Image 1: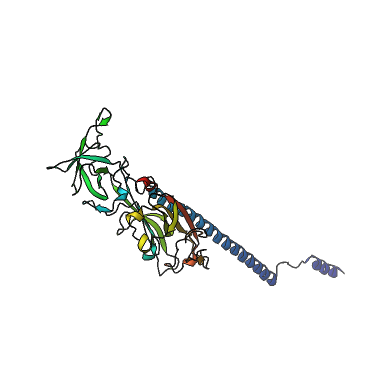
Image 2: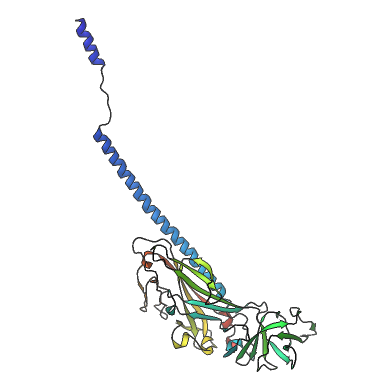
Length: 380
């Protein structure tokens, strides 16, 4: 009896070990892997949306900076070309450089992108840097011998080294101011009028006579806004584009803002030069507007500009398609503006980048009046 009791006690105190079976462990691992997969998928989608949103914000900022930069310069176009009762520089049909290297005094010129790589327009702006506004003063005397001295009623605003504009009827002559050394000092007033004084120029062109006008322009500024686009064929996601500002069409300019891929512009023209009401929007093409005459150039009263900014994020799928305007303009990219009730919008072509459809774009547009041309309307 004693032996049996001891064996029973041993059986009752023994407890088998408990735990997960191999099947349960595999099921748990599978659930964990599925949860991790879902989390990574959500994270990937969220990260893609964040990059798209961030890139769109960058495009918004870049486009705003680009349009502001052009507008700031364009509002200066034609500054210094002030009209006068007898001679207006905007009315000159002949221009002589006089050794200054200046070949044009047109306030603004659009070079159509159809002839340029990337199909993006160039906007060339001209204006003077003078503080006096280029106020013309009559020439009252011309030195017969010796230095190239011109006697004027007032030399205020003239400085040695300035570009001088001599206007005789419909002929504009450019030269440089060379003296006298104290020319920056305003003339002494005597009663109600200024004492006559002298301006020495590098050369006096043939045909300049007493009664013609002299304007001191300071420096003659040229600003060219254009797109610089570089496509890397070895990398689908490494195309670089930016808007640059140049002073010479043959020399590289300074970068202004990144991810600007296209600029389109149109002239806003009036029926006559003496009117300030824009009646049509035209591209800088054809025999009339690719190289307008002075008469047609003076009909240009404003510019309408579209700047295309790109979201720098390359998308695996196609996110941008072809846009067709109401007037039937087919754009390989977004449309410039709605042309339902106006002249046809310019064409935007982004196909210089074979992967253009894998990027998102924003279009910024504005109308900028040429105020210095508008103010001269009565003499045009």
